[in-house]
Image (cartoon, rainbow, N blue to C red; front, side, top):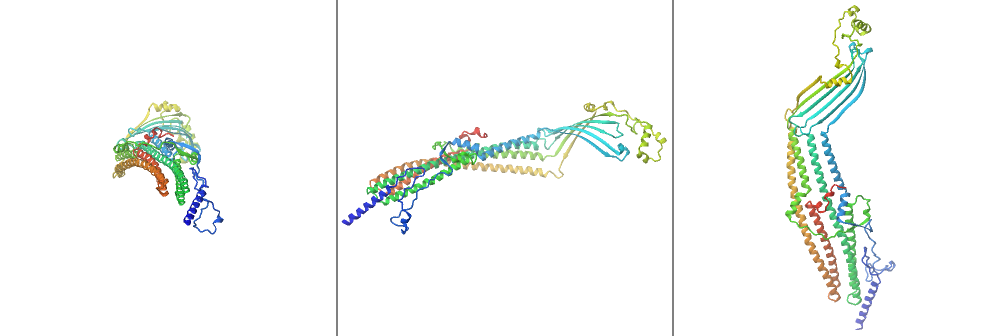
Length: 610
């Protein structure tokens, strides 16, 4: 009897000592970094000789470090709505900016293609002076050299007619020539020429040619890049929505884990009181301490998830790596409770087939292929063109009667004799020719220069428009392969096969869209059901935990069942929150699958704004 009483007293003393030692440690409160319940401090020298595991073993100081989100000032909050996040992403996202640039490039490509039908003005003007040696009397150059100077001014307009593929040109040439040729009696001379020419394809190129093909393709490419821009925008919106709800879940789950630590600490304090009252064994406190440590690990796992989710969202909305938002704490403020849209599978499929950009992209590619087919079919025709031209000429000059010309009636015999005496070429060429024979050379009369050819540049232009010297040409030119145009036929056949390929791809795209819509709709409905079940599970877990606590107080349960219920309650709270955010992401995926993201988020009018 005395032995039993002694053992009972020793047990009471041990229990009281443990309770005092535990109560000496301040009870931690829930915080961003909840501390671990401190163990009794033991100096290292006191542990010498103590085995690795001993009944009275106490661990070294394991107080938790002050952890936070790396590079984020927790006091600098950035409230953010989902609409603001989408707007920032559309304004700052690099992929969106690149796609927007592609649209502008396509617009310039269309202007370039249309430039093929803009008329072009060409021209040149220059002054030229040339001095060349001559070795013949008939070269007309005194002192064995001939000097000529020209002033040239040319201009022209060329272009084409889009409806028929015809090309035209109008050219005007004007020259002023001066020379020291001893035989030239009209010096300087003025020449003007005005020519019109048109080339009209008869077969190939009359209905459709390369410039018209380039314009039509540029139009389709512009439509294609617009659709690609819209497709990328929808993808970015869906990514922002998912990242936004991931961050919402991570922050709320962090709070759930913090609350779990607080509940575990309260349970620990409660267990201490029960130990002090003798209702629990001292070892039950160790189980409660372990529960606190386990929940603390969950807090830091949740904190890491917050950092990852926040960085993912910032990466989508930040304009650059040096933006101030990287150092701020982003706080989603939209309600996490969204109502799922009410729709049927047929309605969702119809919407997807009308709105999905992939189908529009395929249609634009088919339109471009139809243009190629039309062009290459045109190229199979023979190349035969009708050519017509009309040219006007005008000339004028200054007549010089003092110029000696041995073949003209304007000179005299004595002047010819003098010319022969002074010209070694003539004497060397005619050694037997004497002056008497020279005087007998007959003078060949020439008609006088018409008055309309005497004058300056004005007279030349007047002669031009008087149409005194016209030139008219009309004809046909052709370019036909001797053994058939195999190249054009092969290109046309290739374009037909490309069309069949695009049709097959469209069928596959439609089937993929159907699968995508079915999966998205199924995921949304599953998420709704999971949310309902998760809410019921959380409510029941709360009731079970409270009931198990009451049983423990009445001695009808043990601490391990209470801790098990506590863990289940924390998991149920986290699961309910996860189910709600998964439903929100499923709604976003359904909007993407049906191509309705732009309309659902009211941003269609801002697609191409910056």
